[in-house]
Length: 150
Image (spheres, rainbow, N blue to C red):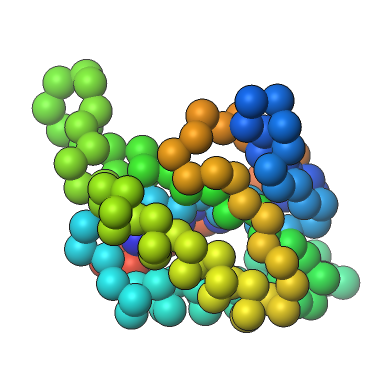
């Protein structure tokens, strides 16, 4: 799994002109799922997301987590995070999981983040043409790959 975490002061997802999810302070999380992903990847990544300390404390240091700032999550499925760009100029997406594998893991990620955050996670719609708006705070953008734990 790959996640792009963006610290935001607001973010929203629109599908066909209707808002499917919106948040104020928190994380916009773009989530890519590949065929090799398992529930262990999901558990590790969900813990990382919820406990990531990238909000500023009173000294301006990144020391606070979502819980510390009463933050929210807007979770968006994003198969393009597994774009292969080595050859040519048209990306390939063969590593991205097909919907029959990706949808259950995406739905489980929503449930797991909801439990860990102790509040409802806002979402887009899997596979839909989504329009995402955000006000990136910082900007602070973190990439996490469960197969390359740096």
